[in-house]
Image 1: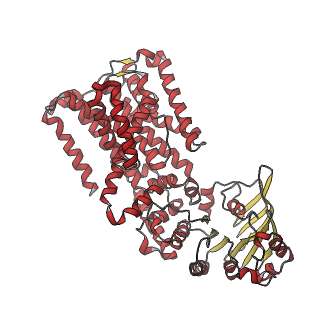
Image 2: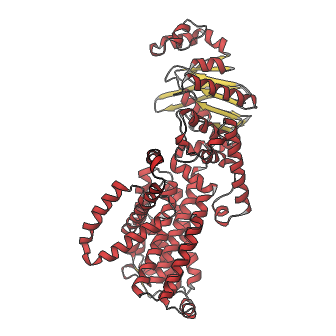
Image 3: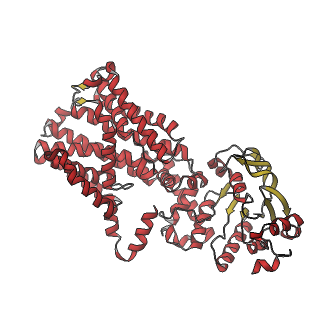
Length: 268
Length: 325
């Protein structure tokens, strides 16, 4: 569904991401993992159109998105969430989702001032689209609360609803489980599975290995900005280069877990 | 409820001139409404979009001088010159936005401040067109306004008052509609976080440009009214002092609220008039007042009202939420 070729970006002399060629298959959950500073988030910002790559191309359903501005990438069907709970805390849950739906409406300033039929139609459409998204994440009953009043998990769901409201085909989640307790993480995994069962393709960056191993169909491993392995969770966790990358960096020794030597450490 | 408050307020205000108040009171009223329109324009940018442009007096000047020049030198009717001034102010806003939106935050404010100064300089130096230091003298009242006023038993000052009131009502309607639309929600999204808005699919650049055009068009609207009401134009009124005065009105009234620009303008303008006798000493009153305002009502009069109304149990949550805005 999403194909990147020789993708790279340089900040000054630093190659944050270098020469990555990979595929995010349709209808699956792809996880992007790697030790801290491996370039995961940068890679994420590249494929969501947030950063402009210095080399390579990003293709979505065969169409080149490399030089497109972010809002056009969203219009093509690629939506993202942010690492922390980046949402509009002072606005209502519904308004957050409506902002996500903006890319599907056309009414502009003149429509608003003259209350044209298009404005009315879009206003209805925007509300309906936002409510559909809230339904998918189970927040319809909280629609009129200020988003900042929700729990951490609720706010994550608002962020996901905002992305879903743009009616994406590919959903990119940047560390969705960050700051969540185990129970909330389980709920989140169930939500992601549900979305994928409904036909959505998901790609996520995540540190929590339990989530990655339990959820992903396909894993991309980044290290020093380069792709060092890709495959199923089982394949990746047996890959010598991956084990080396994780065990080689002391701060994250054993994070890889499951099947590799570091298995026990991951549960410690 | 607020749907009824505004029309009721405007109807009440429309009755005032028929009670034959002093000319001074009507003049204060016209000035408050005129400057409030400019404050509403600034509010579209600062209050809703979260950007502080500091060239608004310049756009006010473009509207005013276009109206003045077209009526005085080209012999246009005010009723045509006024819309032309508004259109030119919007166009100038678009041109400024095309360049200025390449900058963000403080750089944007400083850039627009510079442009504001340039606009004033051009007005001041272009003698042949603007009258330069001498300014433009003798801009006539709108054609037919005096006759129309007399027909309903008012003097010209009463007619001007009603014209200003209509202008203000139109402004409030426009701003309210823009704010309530998905366009307006997108502006709030930009204010809350430009990067997040972009990722959520909002075309940040075009939304900012539209907001800027609406904002400067309102400045031009106020400017055209000023030209015909005062009858004289000098370049000083288009300078940064005016911008900062209106910014003060807006901050006192409450950013990003529908009532704020009017409340702030009404309060501070009447206060300035009352304290005029004190001349420079009036700042002894203003200074502490501003300090108190910033300490106890950082979101202006309108913000204070909202907080008092949404009081007690939700208070802690509310203040937290507002400070995050």
